[in-house]
Image (cartoon, rainbow, N blue to C red; front, side):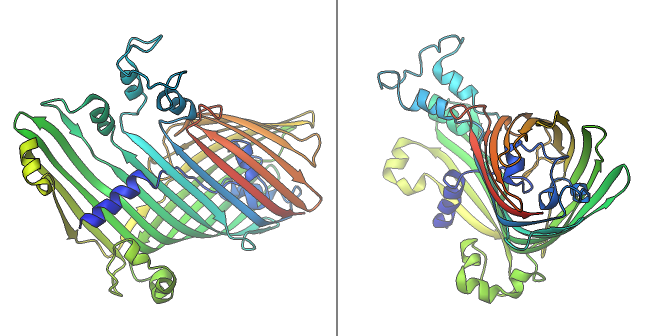
Length: 457
């Protein structure tokens, strides 16, 4: 029981974080995701399938290697770490009670103010299209890939207690969150070209691999004259195997002079049903667990008919004081866990994202781009905050394009990207790095890296 709870805490505090999104290749990453109008071929899938209709630009493409990974948080940057965790200019620890220069508060108060009210969040995202199975032919495309998402959060109250202590009479909210999602997607995309515009759609089968999360939690911690008190609970739900469906819709205008417009809605329909026996993992569980004990890892019974589980953890502490702790250290916490019934199928909606973009070709030397996007949901890789991305691609020398971009709003607030490519007649190699939550390596709170090798003609 305690072992399981420690595993849960370890996942929350160590495995770090996840903000993800639809797959984007290294070129789009270098353009800071301003990709609604300029993506072509296989790269249009996941952003705007209508761009498959520009067969005069690209009639065939195939992924040889395509990889993207992101890691970030919403608080710590290299500059902040160097300022407070490596000491002052002489290497001595900073006195957190002293006033911070230029602010009407102490160092400690300023540091606590940098942590968002909903807590410290960590995230990890990864997207890997399966080689050979991602191909566009004319205005059609077939895609397959694996997407991984993780997001954890720790409550602000933990840091307040650490830095300010446990004030008598005050109650602290110590609720936590966790989401882990791993999905294989198989998609078919097409575009219908018209004289002045294209329309397109992607239909994706979402084959869920695994899901785990703290779907409800609550915890109050307080110090009273008689001792410490706490009444917390966490419900931890897991499932393997899922069937789902998602649909993307897109629209792009043909070039009007040097201008082009586009819009898309990703996952306008999107859901996954988890934990039933009608999926490829359940049907092949014996073979899979001969390689990876997936149910043991997620603490799901190995009974052949069970593919989901939910556990309720309760933590109780009442009138705990120094004397009681010294006489019986095991009594400080009363931790209990109980199995909670789960439905035969757990339905999770796949987040919807809206995008609109414009591009302008300037004197055949530069491509200028702008994208505005927002999620219609606030979970997984979606955020309801509006995000504006501005980017440019230097295309005078087509063999070596250079890209950069900036973004404002969205889940990270500020982003900056840089990328380059090496393009031959039938082969493109691209590399990109994007900074999340800051405009420089020292102020960024995360990074996103992508590399792509594609065959094109």
